[in-house]
Image (cartoon, rainbow, N blue to C red; front, side, top):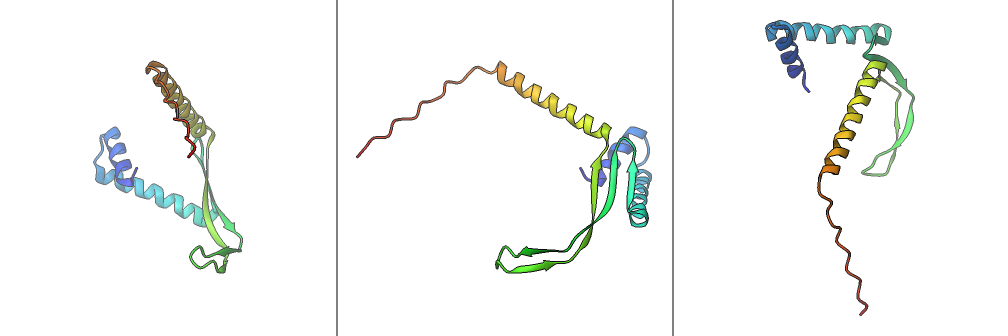
Length: 121
């Protein structure tokens, strides 16, 4: 899903113009980024936690040349989903698995073809 699709979905739900909704969505994203830059952590209840963490320096290998290279330390943004998000995703997974099982149960069983025995020469 793209930001444009998120804006359209929210605008449709609220009955607001997409231009105004786009501005609000962008301001929300900007606030998240600004908070991460300032405090290195933002917790959104029932959604998750964004956190800036430092990856330590390491040695890596260039896959093309096989040469070892030094990778400097860097900052990365991590995300840990909140409890509610985890539960909703798990529910979705279980529903899909149940639908697949039911779909397979209602299909007629197919006869598996036996492999032909190998002949010696």
